Amino acid sequence: MNIYLVIILGILTANYILKLLIELLNISRANPVLPSEFQDYYDADKYKRSQNYLRENTYFSLTHDALLTAIFIVSILTGGFNFIDRLARVFNCGVVLTGLIFAVIIFLGLELIELPFSVYHTFVIEKKYGFNRTRIKTFIADILKSWMLALAIGGTIFSAVVWFFLNMGKSGWVWCWLGVSVAKIFIIFISPLMILPLFNKFTPLEEGETKEAIKKYAEAQGFRMKGIFTMDGSKRSSKSNAFFTGFGKYRRIVFFDTLLKQHPTEEIVAILAHEMGHYKKCHLLKSSIIGIFTNAVMFFILSLFIDNPQLFEAFKMQNISIYASIFFFSFLYAPINMVISMFALFASRKHEYEADHYAFTTYQKSEAFISALKKLTVNNLSNLTPHPLKVFLQYTHPPVLQRIAALRQMQSK
Image 1 (cartoon, helix red, strand yellow):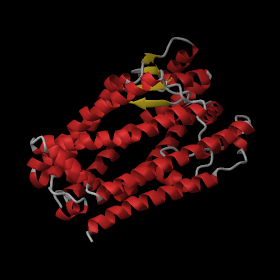
Image 2: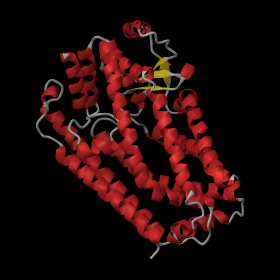
Image 3: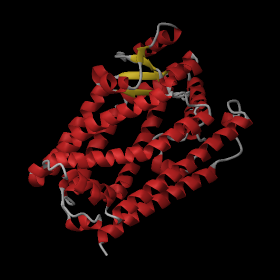
Image 4: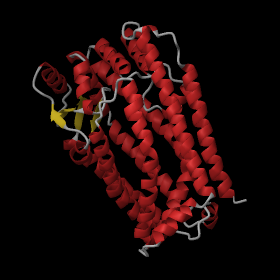
């Protein structure tokens, strides 16, 4: 039997079993006893509702992943990718364009599979728990915009990668790495101005007490504001958040409009202080550097598998091609990516603690920040007691109780 077939089927199966184990452990960790920190923020019914929300999302996600895993396994064993390749070759285009057609067919096929799941999650689960505010018109528009962006940006990057490997010989992986790195940095720069506004309306924070408090804090920190905006997140969900995006003159701090309605001024400034901490500590830059490094590792390993006959035999392919090599390599790379992601996620959680510390030391109202964290958790029905394994493998943020405990420890010093 083909060794690559055995490895790939093993990876797909093991990946789902690991996911199943993590999620079942996570559900079992759900504590029916409300943690004392949240006694004044959750009542018994809402806390039970948050755990029901966790279970329903978990079972939904496991069903989705089981179906997707089964589709991949069946497609590999029955030569489904070879059928797509033959279809792409019907047009008799060059290698790059044929590869793009091949990629687009796979992309659209996966999107159509995802569509009913997205509909169910948005209009059934999220609606059931009082979060969904998305109109069908907005939902359809979001999908079409996402597809156009994916085809325009993703298609261009994919075509460039195929071209580099086709024309640059052994150094092709280096050119791919440099090209993709430049593209990612460029996207970070233009995203606040050209991409995010396609989905949401960004409005400068209106004059008033909150804006004055933000200005006062920002000036005290020597932060020249390039833009503090409110985003109309309420047109899709009642959930709230805030984020920092962009570099240099394109940097923006963004508050969901739902967040501004749910928190008083002191809590808003505390959240701002946390987001400013990400900026002051250069977390976005550090994360980008980590991403650039991991891309180098990925493209180098990919170069070792380009046009590998045994790999193509595993997928029952009649023709060997660079573009299909990229897709097939993604199955082999999954375990490596998981290991690399562990380090990236660890760094992300560390960054959150650092931003919390910055907020604590620069904005002398730690109780306001703790209160903001609690309200965000309750309003989003977030899980208070995730399993450590899930946190280790999947969480970008530390669990809220651990963040609060760290803040309490700082208070006691």
